[in-house]
Length: 410
Image 1: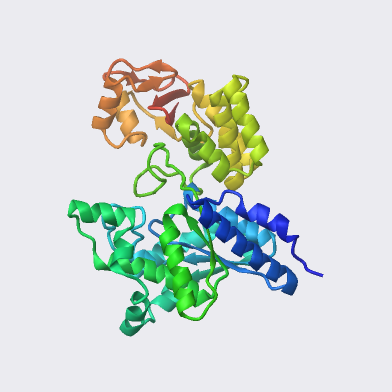
Image 2 (image 1 turned 30 degrees about the horizontal axis):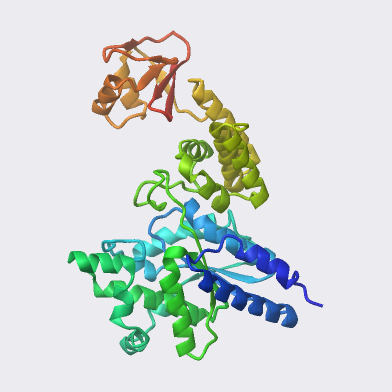
């Protein structure tokens, strides 16, 4: 008797959200996945699943969690999951979403950033069931002859047909040879691990298919690939990326995550609801129907979404506190985690802002006041000469939309 759920149920769960941008590829991959799942069901052997994450920064963001949650679904269904940290591929940098070359980093750089990845991954994955691996273990062992052998499976035309390379070629911009190697290295990850299924973003499809080709060249059965839509960043335009400055880190303070979600553009709401939350599709559709009919205000929906996202990664208690703090901030009050500045003598508002760490310099403080971006106890600060006096009780300074400072007397 198999310990796995029925194949139809597994297929329904695992194919949810999959997007190749091509109906035929979807049908082909669904058929192959179903075949693998049936074999697993019949033999009792769990499938080997993995997704790779290059440590380009020390923090995982919401964009990473889309594939991680799919890995968790495989885990919950009884399959073996590997969280692969691209310590070697990270030295090159994935060119898939770039129209210019990435800055290269050293292996030590990549290993340093990778330290926090494994810890943060367990906010989504089951730590007891997850294998953590690093691809420098096998990639740095390849000889030059091995690399030539891998490269012989592809043509330059195949690479130049990729949109990002094509644009750079047409514009006369540099395309470095090592950028071509990235797909070879990622493809070899599948060979080294003899995987059944690899997961990635839609921008990774070329690299994932390269893995299928290399597995076949090495006498292995080509892996099934599942790709998922890209999550837009907080700007609502570019893909979420720490380097772009439009990311929401899963390890950021709950209040920061909550506020960033509240400030997301309306046009990305469905994308976030479908890719990041635990909600069923029926629930998502019902929420948007209520928004369209006017029964649910968009701001109230954003509060629900923000609570859900904070709860996923930091728990219900943190989500409740973040929601309360958001309400306080909306009413001009400081959130519970706002820093405190002790006022021992009369001090100019610009000095308080700078020394309290709300701004980086008095110059920035001055510009913020001139732009009516500073409030004291809810009232806009009109003068740069304003003095704060000790003994006036606790006062609250708000700088911009998100930064608060509690001022108390010594």
